[in-house]
Image (tube, rainbow, N blue to C red):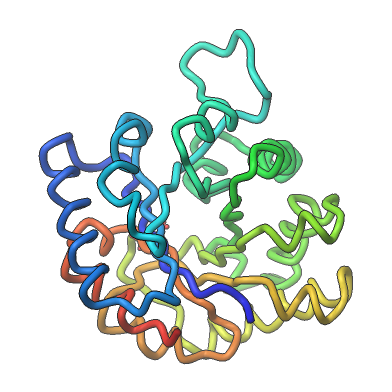
Length: 255
Ligand code: PGA
């Protein structure tokens, strides 16, 4: 069985007091309301990582996530954070290749392949993001484009490492826009990606790979998206900043 995951991506939001309150509200609600088979991941800005884990250490179904890491193991890279530093603060998951980083920080799939390697080498789980632009969705081979992102970013991995990766399909046109992919659009892409994985790694690996959907996911649309056979959960941006909304999304994922 593949893992069911709902990951919240706070992005660059919430200062200390509001962020700490959000963590404690989510921790309490997840403990009381969310099926323990659903893995909840909170991906927060770096400064939170040093203390957040203490707030949910005893709850196995909440994990700590970072939003990025550097591609080199250590060294003179002022302002950057390595995968080994993250691991030493008990981080479990790292988002790699979010479309905002691809766009604003010019991160290529080749660079992301290095980041994935670092995350895995430090016993954490990469959440590898992929997805097409609106122009490509309207006029191009959008499925081929996203498959290629996987090929370049991930298919260098041997199967025993690849099975530790979580993939998040996030169409860029749906991120922060209120325009969600329909369940049919999400399922079409997820099924194509699973087939692409099967062609490279075989059916067993593909069947065990967790594929998340992200892009304007909220408590209203999550149930129909999560009902798709190849959607194994979500990567949630804006809606992860509101405890009630986020936990309702977590509750709508069938365990
Ligand atoms: P959104 O962001 O839910 O606010 O659209 C999703 C993401 O960027 O991970």
